[in-house]
Length: 460
Image (cartoon, rainbow, N blue to C red; front, side):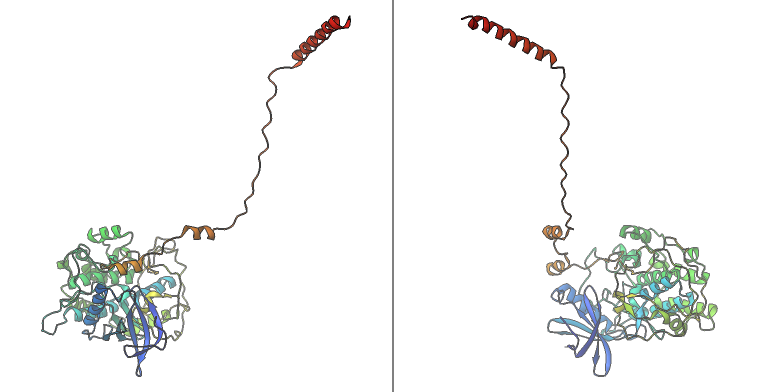
């Protein structure tokens, strides 16, 4: 068990900010620098497959040097623990920002959604075109582009994180046939069907993220089977059919969500170029930039608290009426780590600022069937549980629920006093006939018998 003050990988741990299914994340200091440390949980550190995945993520992420990708400085193994030393980001993941926006009825303007999309596309294009030591493309595909893995900092910077399920030519672990990785609701059709994935697969996933960011609701909902049928059955609603949004924005997202990889943009760079073109025409005064994004998100960087929050995709209650209040400043908060906010629930104390550009987005009617981002997570298990890689028997046992003891359940039941009520005896049935004739006959017989005896013995 790690604790504050421990030194691991050359970093003095100061506080644990997140605990996930496979790893925990700590904030710490390396000399005078603040860094993040991601440590695989000890229960899984002995599993060869999971260890390989952990090394894969580090080997890929350490090569990525881009302003829109969370920096991983190095990885280490110490005292049987596997860890990565990462960039510490003062921010929130996109999922938490959308949760807060939904609760506050303050949708993100499409201009800011497009700015986020451009940054994510630029970071992923850098990964897609990464070369190995031999000068050949590494063929990196993220395969898990979701709001959970998009981080927004206080200055409006956008970063992609978590290449833990990325596919690359130099991977140590190989995906087995029939095994898919990622979150189902954000997968491209070819990824769900177990076919070859490529940069266009990440483009589809980014299209889902942008659709949801603008619409402020989930695109694919329901059970796993229903979601798969929606994605593979080409059941994708154009954004303009459900929202009042600029037609070029809807057209770009629809292009990214094309069912066939060949029908989508040729590369993430093409997505970047198209968003730049749209921004120059639709938002020429710089509405699609870091400054307005930081202003919009400032009200949602309030301190977070742990709750029993639901995971993304859970059905929400009716949305409360919109508020028109504004706040002058956001409360200061300590830095959070990549992925750290994913395990926490954010409740904004102050309503959002009113200075960002007005959006032309229509929120769902109050009381409508809204599937939002509130944890919203399943976590979420998540609404669409992501397929997991094969685990050893040790890892499987670690995930099994504890057995239920029925004697313990019996002791936990409330003690209700037992009250017995004896029912009254049923009434006897009345006699079937009168006894008078019998009594008269018996009396006559007795009298005759006495008279006879008197005659026989009385005379003597």
